[in-house]
Image (tube, rainbow, N blue to C red; front, top):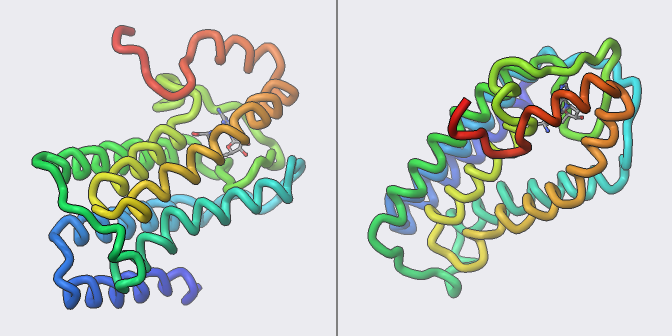
Length: 214
Ligand code: SAH
């Protein structure tokens, strides 16, 4: 239980270090963004069903989610709180932080909605839980993978808010890799499980970007 709050302590320490290092205000936006998505995930997944019935590609999945943790959490925190990556720092162009902030806000909204709609069926890896049903309502009626849309928006925010050629795009690079390697297997798993129900859903619903007109 207490372990869930360790990330806040780490973020507080990094905030202090970043302020002391005189980092731009966008740093604080990025830290708030990390705090917000972590809070959404922690609060909305605490009741995830424990009983997993099927898991696929377990080893590769763990490798990929660890890589995403490094690119979205570890590397940015090191870049914000220490001088390790300072040689790759650059000055932002006008509007960059504004765009980053907007992308982050949009990402948080979609992240929150997708967690609310997927509910207890969420998992970090490719898993089916006991009594798994296919969610097709709420934000899942607009796109098949809103959580991945949200994470793409959040790592784009990281790339824009963290003015460092290495640490900025790190999240985008590793998440793109995870997405590319996972999405086919995830959809195959759902197709195997839900058959025609999945086929119909996939026919009427785009993957990542909602259609503009209903
Ligand atoms: N790809 C989804 C969910 C990510 S969480 C998104 O981006 O929103 C990953 C887990 O969600 C997978 O293990 C899978 O079992 C489950 N999942 C994905 N889409 C689902 C759906 N429409 N209904 C129910 N479970 C789903």
